[in-house]
Image (cartoon, rainbow, N blue to C red):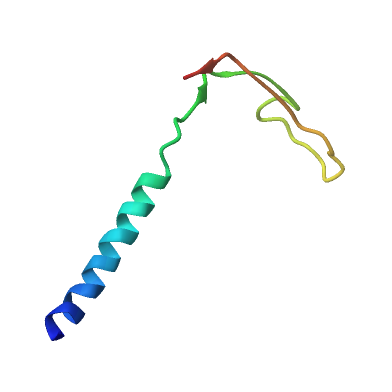
Length: 61
């Protein structure tokens, strides 16, 4: 009986690790490059700026 108690913690840790690593199997997507931005990159903006617009290139899979 004591041997089973010693094996319980490693078995639970192994099962938790397997569940964690198998859960994140979605593919990653990325854009090619930033096409345009408003305000322009490097521009100084005030605290009253409410909208920032970014336009990216095509999406890569």
